[in-house]
Length: 383
Ligand SMILES: *Cc1c(COP(=O)(O)O)cnc(C)c1O
View 1 (cartoon, rainbow, N blue to C red):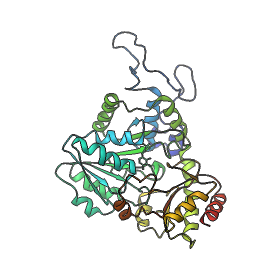
View 2: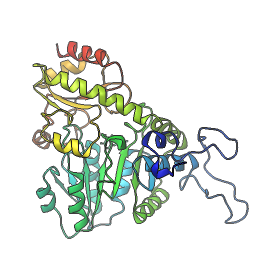
View 3: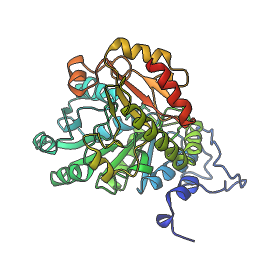
View 4: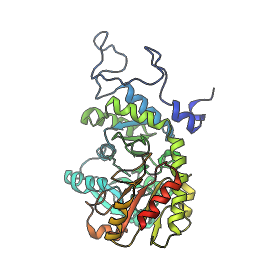
């Protein structure tokens, strides 16, 4: 039998972190719906004392996603933003964070409007530009936070190069790997100190849970995160952990399907005159296609298209029948959204324009339906 580190992704997806329940043999990790655990005597227990601190269903999920990212430890939180918040709460007042200038709108809001009030300092910079990243580093910089590819304009940051810059100043590099998932991109292997996910998206994949997780190889980082789980308590419930675990068992199969559909649809859109621009890292026309090919094994199902105006965007979003108008992404069903008024409404208009999040930008989360039906739907919606 191969050791866990030799097992392939598909095998880890199905098995890592799980074993038949020791009490009953149940093949699926039970939903340990309990707040506390009986102790045999004072201080004598089976490793679980109180469910804010730990829960066996959560332990299984943490070990499973850690294995998929090629990391030692996972720390699960109640949402992607709770996971990101925990990473920043490893710092102290006066510390400085460099953050990519095109991150998930909620991350931007958390940093600018919540954590910056608590004495942390943030600089937002285009991390595609490594010189700009280097120049934004200060003596007090402790964390560099990047999302790649970014939401929604699909900018790519060179993770290996960013890790070198970050290591030199003894800061942590944390990569939001929500869009690519560990199936297509492995930031820890490229030198990142930690990976964060909104497991709400592809990891769970069925649009029925909100969750987040951090994976790291670093003992000090995971100790800090466990202390925050215990001290802050933004932990996921056992039912949510169970559902995400059920989702990760098929991650590899789903990502292959998202990627296959994503590529076909991006190519079709790129050849359609009604669409002014297509942002998809898998297209040779993407300005960072070579970098994307170097650090990603596949490109997934996220595509942004420019249709020219707010009116056109509204028309397209209102006409699709299979693509549902909704926030979120990464589920088996296809979704369509308008970032400027939905996910990125909190980002100031000038910033949005500078980033290319125009009023005519439409974002697609391509699901795993039949690709010909999806293309036909977009064809009729483009009018
Ligand atoms: C959705 C999302 C988040 C936030 O996660 P929640 O689970 O909604 O809190 C963070 N980063 C990215 C890239 C996302 O898409």
